[in-house]
Image (cartoon, rainbow, N blue to C red; front, side, top):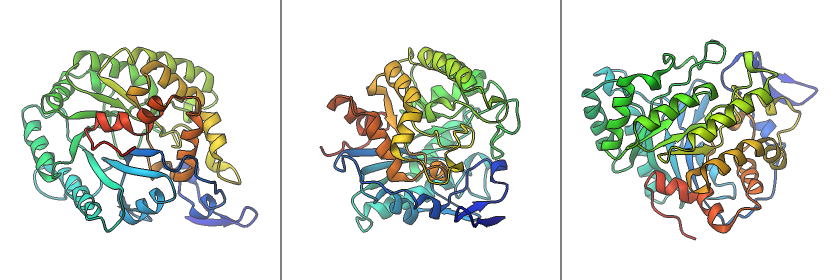
Amino acid sequence: MVKVDMKRGVTMAENSRTSHYIPVRQDWLARRTEDILEPDLPIIDPHHHLWDRPNWRYLLDELLADINFGHNICSTVFVQCRAFVRTGGPEAMRHVGETEFVAGVAAMSDSGIYGDTRVCEGIVGHADLTLGDKLDDVLDAHIAAAGGRFRGIRHIVAWDPDPDVMNPGYSPPQHYLMDERFRDGLRRLGRKGLTFDAWLYHPQIPDLTAAARACPETNMVLDHVGGPLGMAGYAGRRDEVFTDWSASIKALAACPNVYVKLGGLGMRVNDFGFEEATDPPSSATLAETWRPYMETCIEAFGASRCMFESNFPVDKGSYSYPVYWNACKLLTKGASATEKADLFAGTAQRFYNLEPVAD
Protein backbone atom coordinates (compact mmCIF):
# COMPACT_ATOMS: atom_id res chain seq x y z
CA MET A 1 0.00 0.00 0.00
CA VAL A 2 1.23 3.50 -0.85
CA LYS A 3 0.54 6.67 1.09
CA VAL A 4 1.63 10.27 0.82
CA ASP A 5 3.49 11.87 3.71
CA MET A 6 2.11 15.42 3.57
CA LYS A 7 4.84 16.83 5.83
CA ARG A 8 7.65 15.51 3.68
CA GLY A 9 5.76 15.73 0.39
CA VAL A 10 7.07 12.39 -0.87
CA THR A 11 5.43 9.13 -1.74
CA MET A 12 6.13 6.47 0.86
CA ALA A 13 5.55 2.72 0.78
CA GLU A 14 3.43 1.50 3.67
CA ASN A 15 5.39 -0.94 5.82
CA SER A 16 8.36 -0.49 3.48
CA ARG A 17 10.73 -1.50 6.28
CA THR A 18 9.37 -5.04 6.04
CA SER A 19 10.03 -5.35 2.30
CA HIS A 20 13.24 -6.99 1.09
CA TYR A 21 13.65 -4.22 -1.49
CA ILE A 22 13.64 -0.49 -0.76
CA PRO A 23 10.83 1.07 -2.83
CA VAL A 24 11.90 3.45 -5.59
CA ARG A 25 10.37 6.91 -5.11
CA GLN A 26 11.06 8.94 -8.21
CA ASP A 27 9.77 12.18 -6.69
CA TRP A 28 12.12 11.73 -3.71
CA LEU A 29 15.09 11.01 -5.98
CA ALA A 30 14.29 14.18 -7.94
CA ARG A 31 15.05 16.24 -4.84
CA ARG A 32 18.77 15.71 -5.45
CA THR A 33 20.45 16.92 -8.64
CA GLU A 34 24.18 17.37 -9.16
CA ASP A 35 26.49 18.45 -11.92
CA ILE A 36 28.12 15.43 -13.56
CA LEU A 37 31.76 15.01 -12.54
CA GLU A 38 34.28 14.03 -15.24
CA PRO A 39 31.54 13.49 -17.85
CA ASP A 40 33.94 12.10 -20.46
CA LEU A 41 35.35 9.30 -18.27
CA PRO A 42 34.49 5.96 -19.97
CA ILE A 43 32.38 3.67 -17.78
CA ILE A 44 31.28 0.06 -18.08
CA ASP A 45 28.44 -0.73 -15.71
CA PRO A 46 29.06 -4.44 -15.00
CA HIS A 47 25.97 -5.12 -12.89
CA HIS A 48 22.38 -4.16 -13.56
CA HIS A 49 19.06 -5.92 -13.96
CA LEU A 50 16.00 -5.68 -16.18
CA TRP A 51 12.54 -6.87 -15.16
CA ASP A 52 8.80 -6.30 -15.31
CA ARG A 53 7.42 -7.03 -11.86
CA PRO A 54 4.10 -5.99 -10.32
CA ASN A 55 4.34 -2.20 -9.78
CA TRP A 56 8.03 -2.23 -10.74
CA ARG A 57 9.01 -2.03 -14.38
CA TYR A 58 12.69 -1.59 -15.28
CA LEU A 59 13.26 -2.41 -18.90
CA LEU A 60 15.29 -0.76 -21.67
CA ASP A 61 13.48 2.60 -21.53
CA GLU A 62 13.95 2.91 -17.77
CA LEU A 63 17.59 1.87 -17.95
CA LEU A 64 18.28 4.37 -20.73
CA ALA A 65 16.64 7.13 -18.69
CA ASP A 66 19.25 6.46 -16.00
CA ILE A 67 22.36 5.90 -18.08
CA ASN A 68 21.69 8.88 -20.37
CA PHE A 69 21.81 11.32 -17.48
CA GLY A 70 25.30 12.62 -18.29
CA HIS A 71 27.91 10.00 -17.39
CA ASN A 72 29.74 8.30 -20.26
CA ILE A 73 28.28 4.79 -19.95
CA CYS A 74 29.88 2.91 -22.84
CA SER A 75 28.66 -0.61 -22.09
CA THR A 76 26.68 -2.63 -19.57
CA VAL A 77 26.44 -6.18 -18.26
CA PHE A 78 23.10 -7.73 -17.34
CA VAL A 79 23.07 -10.03 -14.30
CA GLN A 80 20.40 -12.62 -13.65
CA CYS A 81 17.30 -11.66 -11.67
CA ARG A 82 14.63 -14.26 -12.58
CA ALA A 83 13.29 -12.09 -15.43
CA PHE A 84 11.12 -13.73 -18.10
CA VAL A 85 11.93 -17.27 -17.02
CA ARG A 86 10.12 -19.88 -19.10
CA THR A 87 6.98 -21.35 -17.56
CA GLY A 88 7.23 -24.67 -19.40
CA GLY A 89 9.72 -27.20 -20.65
CA PRO A 90 12.49 -28.91 -18.69
CA GLU A 91 13.01 -27.13 -15.38
CA ALA A 92 16.78 -26.98 -15.80
CA MET A 93 16.34 -25.03 -19.05
CA ARG A 94 13.74 -22.52 -17.92
CA HIS A 95 16.22 -19.76 -17.05
CA VAL A 96 17.44 -19.82 -20.65
CA GLY A 97 14.30 -17.76 -21.28
CA GLU A 98 15.89 -14.90 -19.36
CA THR A 99 18.95 -15.02 -21.62
CA GLU A 100 16.71 -15.02 -24.71
CA PHE A 101 14.93 -11.92 -23.42
CA VAL A 102 18.15 -10.04 -22.63
CA ALA A 103 19.69 -10.98 -25.98
CA GLY A 104 16.68 -9.31 -27.60
CA VAL A 105 17.27 -6.14 -25.60
CA ALA A 106 20.95 -6.22 -26.58
CA ALA A 107 19.97 -6.58 -30.24
CA MET A 108 17.75 -3.51 -29.92
CA SER A 109 20.70 -1.61 -28.49
CA ASP A 110 23.02 -2.84 -31.23
CA SER A 111 20.72 -1.22 -33.81
CA GLY A 112 21.99 2.18 -32.72
CA ILE A 113 18.46 3.56 -32.48
CA TYR A 114 18.76 3.90 -28.70
CA GLY A 115 22.14 5.59 -28.50
CA ASP A 116 25.80 4.68 -28.35
CA THR A 117 25.80 2.61 -25.13
CA ARG A 118 26.27 -1.11 -25.76
CA VAL A 119 23.44 -2.20 -23.46
CA CYS A 120 23.74 -5.79 -22.21
CA GLU A 121 26.97 -6.36 -24.10
CA GLY A 122 27.56 -9.12 -21.57
CA ILE A 123 24.94 -11.45 -20.11
CA VAL A 124 25.23 -13.35 -16.82
CA GLY A 125 22.45 -15.89 -16.48
CA HIS A 126 21.38 -18.56 -14.02
CA ALA A 127 21.90 -22.30 -14.03
CA ASP A 128 21.81 -24.82 -11.23
CA LEU A 129 25.49 -25.56 -10.74
CA THR A 130 24.73 -28.85 -8.98
CA LEU A 131 23.30 -30.52 -12.12
CA GLY A 132 26.44 -32.48 -12.92
CA ASP A 133 26.74 -33.61 -16.55
CA LYS A 134 23.37 -32.02 -17.40
CA LEU A 135 24.83 -28.60 -16.61
CA ASP A 136 26.86 -28.62 -19.83
CA ASP A 137 23.69 -28.80 -21.90
CA VAL A 138 22.17 -25.88 -20.00
CA LEU A 139 25.30 -23.77 -20.45
CA ASP A 140 25.37 -24.58 -24.17
CA ALA A 141 21.72 -23.48 -24.44
CA HIS A 142 22.52 -20.15 -22.76
CA ILE A 143 25.49 -19.62 -25.07
CA ALA A 144 23.37 -20.36 -28.13
CA ALA A 145 20.56 -18.05 -26.99
CA ALA A 146 22.84 -15.12 -26.17
CA GLY A 147 24.19 -14.45 -29.65
CA GLY A 148 27.82 -14.23 -28.54
CA ARG A 149 27.07 -12.25 -25.38
CA PHE A 150 26.95 -14.95 -22.71
CA ARG A 151 29.65 -14.49 -20.10
CA GLY A 152 28.80 -16.47 -16.98
CA ILE A 153 26.48 -17.73 -14.28
CA ARG A 154 25.18 -16.33 -11.04
CA HIS A 155 23.79 -19.05 -8.78
CA ILE A 156 22.85 -17.12 -5.64
CA VAL A 157 24.07 -18.68 -2.38
CA ALA A 158 23.20 -15.84 0.05
CA TRP A 159 22.16 -17.54 3.31
CA ASP A 160 21.64 -16.47 6.91
CA PRO A 161 19.97 -18.23 9.85
CA ASP A 162 17.65 -15.21 10.27
CA PRO A 163 14.76 -15.53 7.79
CA ASP A 164 14.34 -11.73 7.85
CA VAL A 165 17.72 -11.39 6.14
CA MET A 166 16.97 -13.94 3.43
CA ASN A 167 15.64 -12.89 0.02
CA PRO A 168 12.26 -14.64 -0.23
CA GLY A 169 12.99 -15.41 -3.89
CA TYR A 170 15.93 -17.67 -3.05
CA SER A 171 16.41 -20.48 -0.54
CA PRO A 172 19.93 -21.92 -0.92
CA PRO A 173 21.22 -24.30 1.75
CA GLN A 174 23.92 -23.25 4.19
CA HIS A 175 27.52 -23.70 2.95
CA TYR A 176 26.42 -24.39 -0.62
CA LEU A 177 29.86 -23.37 -1.88
CA MET A 178 31.36 -26.23 0.09
CA ASP A 179 29.17 -28.78 -1.69
CA GLU A 180 31.28 -30.83 -4.11
CA ARG A 181 28.42 -30.86 -6.61
CA PHE A 182 28.45 -27.06 -6.64
CA ARG A 183 32.22 -27.01 -7.05
CA ASP A 184 31.95 -29.43 -9.94
CA GLY A 185 29.66 -26.85 -11.56
CA LEU A 186 32.19 -24.09 -10.91
CA ARG A 187 34.88 -26.13 -12.64
CA ARG A 188 32.60 -26.74 -15.62
CA LEU A 189 32.20 -22.96 -15.98
CA GLY A 190 35.96 -22.56 -16.16
CA ARG A 191 36.31 -25.26 -18.79
CA LYS A 192 33.85 -23.37 -21.01
CA GLY A 193 35.56 -20.03 -20.43
CA LEU A 194 32.64 -18.75 -18.34
CA THR A 195 32.74 -16.81 -15.08
CA PHE A 196 30.94 -17.06 -11.75
CA ASP A 197 29.20 -14.14 -10.05
CA ALA A 198 29.06 -14.79 -6.29
CA TRP A 199 26.26 -13.15 -4.32
CA LEU A 200 26.42 -14.02 -0.64
CA TYR A 201 26.53 -12.32 2.76
CA HIS A 202 29.72 -11.34 4.56
CA PRO A 203 29.80 -14.32 6.99
CA GLN A 204 29.98 -16.59 3.91
CA ILE A 205 33.05 -15.00 2.31
CA PRO A 206 35.36 -17.69 3.76
CA ASP A 207 33.30 -20.30 1.88
CA LEU A 208 33.98 -18.43 -1.36
CA THR A 209 37.68 -18.28 -0.53
CA ALA A 210 37.74 -22.06 -0.08
CA ALA A 211 35.80 -22.59 -3.32
CA ALA A 212 38.10 -20.26 -5.26
CA ARG A 213 41.14 -22.18 -4.01
CA ALA A 214 39.51 -25.47 -4.97
CA CYS A 215 38.54 -24.21 -8.45
CA PRO A 216 41.46 -22.04 -9.59
CA GLU A 217 40.59 -22.53 -13.25
CA THR A 218 37.38 -20.48 -12.88
CA ASN A 219 37.34 -16.70 -12.63
CA MET A 220 34.92 -15.43 -10.01
CA VAL A 221 33.67 -12.02 -8.95
CA LEU A 222 32.31 -11.15 -5.51
CA ASP A 223 29.15 -9.10 -5.95
CA HIS A 224 28.34 -6.03 -3.85
CA VAL A 225 31.62 -6.01 -1.85
CA GLY A 226 30.52 -9.24 -0.20
CA GLY A 227 27.25 -8.13 1.37
CA PRO A 228 28.19 -6.59 4.75
CA LEU A 229 24.97 -7.02 6.73
CA GLY A 230 23.39 -4.32 8.86
CA MET A 231 19.77 -5.37 9.36
CA ALA A 232 17.91 -7.62 11.80
CA GLY A 233 20.37 -9.28 14.18
CA TYR A 234 23.26 -7.32 12.67
CA ALA A 235 21.74 -3.92 13.47
CA GLY A 236 23.88 -1.80 15.77
CA ARG A 237 26.96 -3.95 15.08
CA ARG A 238 28.47 -1.96 12.20
CA ASP A 239 32.01 -1.87 13.63
CA GLU A 240 32.00 -5.57 14.52
CA VAL A 241 30.67 -6.51 11.08
CA PHE A 242 33.29 -4.31 9.38
CA THR A 243 36.09 -6.02 11.32
CA ASP A 244 34.89 -9.49 10.33
CA TRP A 245 34.14 -8.44 6.75
CA SER A 246 37.52 -6.75 6.18
CA ALA A 247 39.47 -9.76 7.48
CA SER A 248 37.53 -12.02 5.10
CA ILE A 249 38.07 -9.65 2.17
CA LYS A 250 41.84 -9.63 2.72
CA ALA A 251 41.95 -13.44 2.82
CA LEU A 252 39.81 -13.72 -0.32
CA ALA A 253 42.06 -11.29 -2.19
CA ALA A 254 44.89 -13.84 -1.97
CA CYS A 255 43.01 -15.89 -4.60
CA PRO A 256 44.18 -14.54 -7.98
CA ASN A 257 41.07 -15.82 -9.77
CA VAL A 258 38.71 -13.64 -7.68
CA TYR A 259 37.62 -10.08 -8.46
CA VAL A 260 35.22 -7.77 -6.61
CA LYS A 261 32.38 -5.44 -7.58
CA LEU A 262 32.30 -2.14 -5.73
CA GLY A 263 28.66 -1.22 -5.16
CA GLY A 264 25.41 -2.75 -4.05
CA LEU A 265 25.50 -0.94 -0.69
CA GLY A 266 22.11 0.69 -1.17
CA MET A 267 20.16 -2.45 -0.34
CA ARG A 268 17.91 -3.23 2.60
CA VAL A 269 20.32 -5.87 3.92
CA ASN A 270 23.09 -3.27 4.36
CA ASP A 271 20.69 -0.95 6.22
CA PHE A 272 22.57 2.32 5.82
CA GLY A 273 19.20 4.06 5.99
CA PHE A 274 19.74 6.50 3.11
CA GLU A 275 16.07 6.16 2.19
CA GLU A 276 14.91 7.44 5.59
CA ALA A 277 16.25 10.98 5.13
CA THR A 278 14.07 13.83 3.93
CA ASP A 279 16.30 14.26 0.90
CA PRO A 280 18.33 11.69 -1.04
CA PRO A 281 22.01 11.45 -0.13
CA SER A 282 24.57 13.54 -1.99
CA SER A 283 27.50 11.93 -3.76
CA ALA A 284 29.73 13.34 -1.02
CA THR A 285 27.64 11.59 1.63
CA LEU A 286 27.78 8.29 -0.24
CA ALA A 287 31.52 8.56 -0.80
CA GLU A 288 32.19 9.30 2.86
CA THR A 289 29.94 6.45 4.04
CA TRP A 290 31.39 3.90 1.64
CA ARG A 291 35.04 4.91 1.74
CA PRO A 292 36.14 2.29 4.34
CA TYR A 293 34.57 -0.51 2.27
CA MET A 294 35.78 0.65 -1.13
CA GLU A 295 39.30 1.45 0.02
CA THR A 296 39.63 -1.87 1.86
CA CYS A 297 38.70 -3.74 -1.33
CA ILE A 298 40.95 -1.68 -3.59
CA GLU A 299 43.91 -2.02 -1.21
CA ALA A 300 43.38 -5.79 -0.93
CA PHE A 301 42.63 -6.66 -4.56
CA GLY A 302 44.27 -3.79 -6.42
CA ALA A 303 42.39 -1.66 -8.94
CA SER A 304 43.05 -4.26 -11.64
CA ARG A 305 40.65 -6.67 -9.89
CA CYS A 306 38.02 -4.14 -8.76
CA MET A 307 35.10 -2.71 -10.74
CA PHE A 308 32.43 -0.18 -9.78
CA GLU A 309 28.84 -1.43 -10.32
CA SER A 310 25.44 0.25 -10.08
CA ASN A 311 23.24 -2.70 -9.05
CA PHE A 312 20.27 -0.84 -10.52
CA PRO A 313 17.37 -0.82 -10.11
CA VAL A 314 17.80 -2.55 -6.73
CA ASP A 315 19.87 0.30 -5.28
CA LYS A 316 17.64 2.96 -6.83
CA GLY A 317 15.56 3.03 -3.66
CA SER A 318 18.52 4.72 -1.94
CA TYR A 319 19.99 7.10 -4.53
CA SER A 320 19.93 8.01 -8.22
CA TYR A 321 22.17 6.67 -10.97
CA PRO A 322 24.05 9.94 -11.67
CA VAL A 323 24.67 10.56 -7.96
CA TYR A 324 26.04 7.04 -7.55
CA TRP A 325 28.64 7.49 -10.30
CA ASN A 326 29.55 10.93 -8.95
CA ALA A 327 30.26 9.25 -5.60
CA CYS A 328 32.55 6.74 -7.31
CA LYS A 329 34.44 9.58 -8.95
CA LEU A 330 34.86 11.34 -5.61
CA LEU A 331 36.22 8.11 -4.15
CA THR A 332 38.91 7.94 -6.82
CA LYS A 333 40.17 11.52 -6.65
CA GLY A 334 43.61 10.33 -5.57
CA ALA A 335 43.84 7.40 -7.98
CA SER A 336 46.25 7.29 -10.89
CA ALA A 337 44.95 7.43 -14.45
CA THR A 338 45.61 3.69 -14.83
CA GLU A 339 43.83 2.82 -11.59
CA LYS A 340 40.83 4.95 -12.50
CA ALA A 341 40.62 3.41 -15.97
CA ASP A 342 40.54 -0.07 -14.39
CA LEU A 343 37.99 0.76 -11.71
CA PHE A 344 35.50 2.34 -14.10
CA ALA A 345 35.94 0.16 -17.19
CA GLY A 346 39.14 -1.82 -17.66
CA THR A 347 38.61 -4.50 -15.01
CA ALA A 348 35.04 -5.17 -16.16
CA GLN A 349 36.15 -5.24 -19.79
CA ARG A 350 38.81 -7.87 -19.09
CA PHE A 351 36.77 -9.97 -16.67
CA TYR A 352 33.72 -10.17 -18.96
CA ASN A 353 35.72 -10.14 -22.23
CA LEU A 354 33.97 -7.05 -23.61
CA GLU A 355 35.01 -4.65 -26.33
CA PRO A 356 37.57 -2.09 -25.08
CA VAL A 357 36.15 1.37 -24.44
CA ALA A 358 37.40 4.37 -26.39
CA ASP A 359 39.67 6.68 -24.41
